[in-house]
Image 1 (cartoon, rainbow, N blue to C red):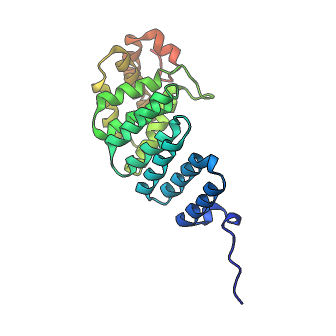
Image 2: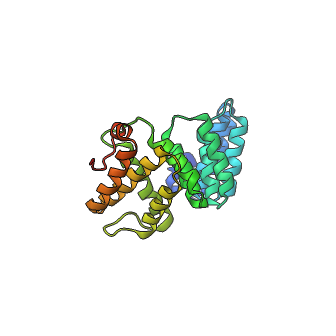
Image 3: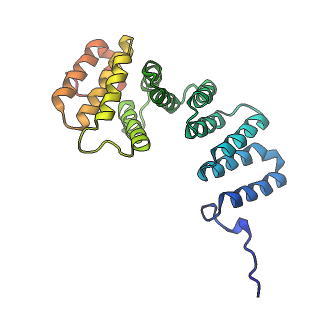
Length: 234
């Protein structure tokens, strides 16, 4: 006796293949044409999860074209897929468009900064990291400095298969030092000294952390205190 074919709508997406998820979404798009761009975004997610990045780019590109108004998240998706393909120039262009459409979202500046780190352009990386750090926001008990540090830790997990552990990662230290070296303004230098101080503090290197903190406070004492950095004050 033939088994009855299960309806795709009865199966969780996590149990479906990429092709099955796309089939489901095509049915949804035909039935609900007014939500075409939303369906295309979900197609992007299906292709992206299935590591079909070129198809993901095509899907989100169509979503951008048919959306009734510009949607910053669509450009964020586009940037992610280009990054996965190693196409950093297009990833940066898409991320810049996302920032233009959503200039008050600090994490976008972090993502732009780390794209520039990967290109080796530490000057532009610093500009974007400082734009993120300068937001007068606190996330619960997490200050902008702590948040930046956690973001950088996840960045190293993604790119170097390890996060900040018990022993100092020389690759990470080199990146922070390169960012400091690339800082050209007093504000940039102060924030990068604070970030480096936070990095040393994580490894309980209090002498080095104190030195970097003093340099930051000497440059911008009032702004650094207001920012809520957890680097030890002098």
